Length: 220
Image 1 (cartoon, rainbow, N blue to C red):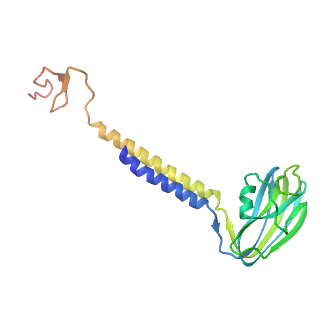
Image 2 (cartoon, rainbow, N blue to C red):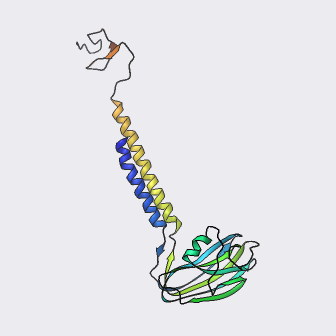
Image 3 (cartoon, one colour):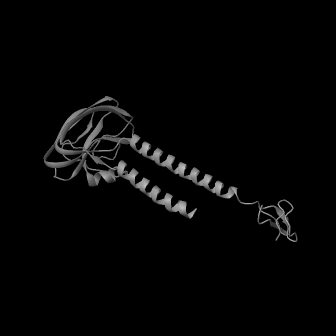
């Protein structure tokens, strides 16, 4: 059992480390691009439509329209305030954000090189001076960036695939270990009570005072 633990524990640790690396943010190679999509954002929730690391002379543009529902906030947040915002803290948006509208557009320029920025469609009450959420909203948006590096989350199926692979491997090892233990114990004689012993040649159970095996004739 100790041997199996020595093998399994490093494998489990390595698997967890690999999953954390895959789920961590991955940087895309493009320095400019345009993203267009539609999202349903439920009340008291938000959606990040862009996460970039700024280069020199970075520029971010966005436009949005609420297809169904009330006004929302489309805000730009720096990395530090964003981490507080995501766990429920109030936040002040950067200049260029659009708040309490059902449609609009904004442009953010001269961002600090090396800093990370989030463009968020907000349907919460955490934005100072922003819209008050009333219901879920359907939002169409377009966002583009120039001279920035896109940072995006890996697709969830990658984590599922890695987790399933690790699970199958651990189950295989456990089954292999179980069969090995069973095979090792297959040749052992059954347990006996007091006053009994085994024949040293055929493992026949006999009483301790017997000196000749009734099965094989071995004498001792």
